[in-house]
Image (cartoon, rainbow, N blue to C red; front, side, top):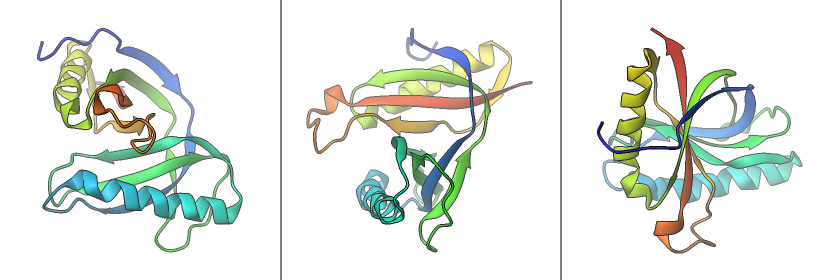
Amino acid sequence: MIAPIDNIRLEQRPAMLAAAIRTTVPATNGGAVMGPLIQAILAYIEGTGVDRTGVPYARTSWEPGSDIEVGILIARAVSGNGRVLPSELPAGAVAVVWFTGPYDQLGPVISAAREWIAERSFKTDLPWEFYHSDPLVVTNPAKFETELVFPVQSQ
């Protein structure tokens, strides 16, 4: 095993509506795109009056030039405004693992989760990374809480 993970579990998730922005990860620090995208989504949500039902998430490989979807879960569908788009995280089986620590240490956890998933004869795609800690409030990266949600399917 690549890195020990002891809190991974399989569960069923319902479909979840989101307001999201899709763009490309820049050639430099991909994480630097998150703050402005989240702020744009929050401003859009506030303007529509729709309630948030979850924390910000991202789905990407984080490789420079790769696609990224940044979103926030919401209570009802929205039409979007050209930049912010309606999105939906699909219902289905997922493997969920929680990680506490700096975002730049997620790689080994993701690798270990992928190995755990493969050992159980599932296949998966990129995880949704749900950021439960606001870095403006929780300033110590060692205390950042991230929920990784991998959609899984039988091979």
